[in-house]
Image 1: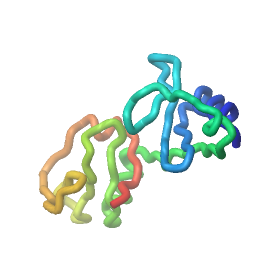
Image 2: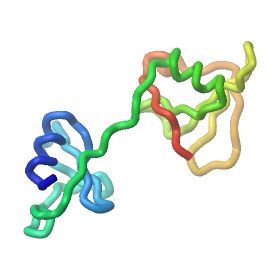
Image 3: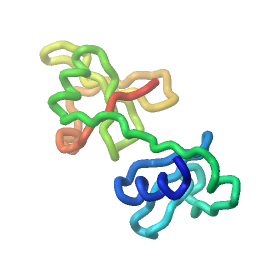
Image 4: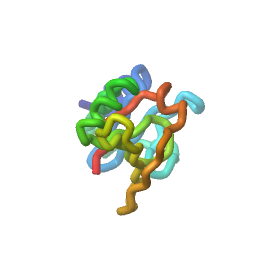
Length: 127
């Protein structure tokens, strides 16, 4: 799709758009399109106007109950808008809550988790 079509979708839906490897999203606070890598306003030249743009579909979101069931099956899940970590339950009835920081090989075990996690939407973590 052309730039103006992608920008309208980004503005109306909040979805990110991309041109090649460059990703941009609409920021309602400034009412403008910003590059995600730098946070700078997207400035358009003649090449970007005619380029092929794509809408990036967000990953499916799950409630805490759905995410917890998936964690018990061994999937790593991530609470949206929270710390940059991957979380998993070890599958035992009264087991541990496992947390692995992004880019870190160590996995930490906890007996409890923040209440905010229950109110969060969750997505499946990609390694």
